[in-house]
Image 1 (cartoon, rainbow, N blue to C red):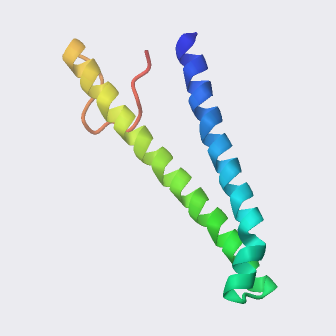
Image 2: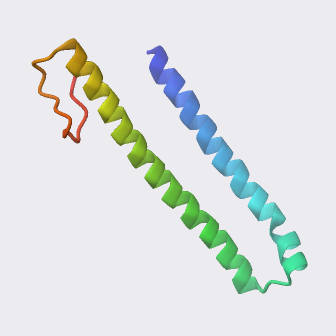
Length: 96
């Protein structure tokens, strides 16, 4: 049960950082518009591109974390039980 609370805390902090980051961008928008002389459409693009890049990073980092977790769990399972069903080419983590 403690690991679940730890995971929840880590995820909550990550979402909090994303929220704060979005707030900073929203508050900086008038200053960005004034300093760069950007139109409303260009400012809209800045916000949209920021969201797209953030989403792409979240998806790619989540995928790489899944792959690395699968590989590490497979290596642990193979060391503990040589007759395990986990091969180096397994894409899914073994069920415990």
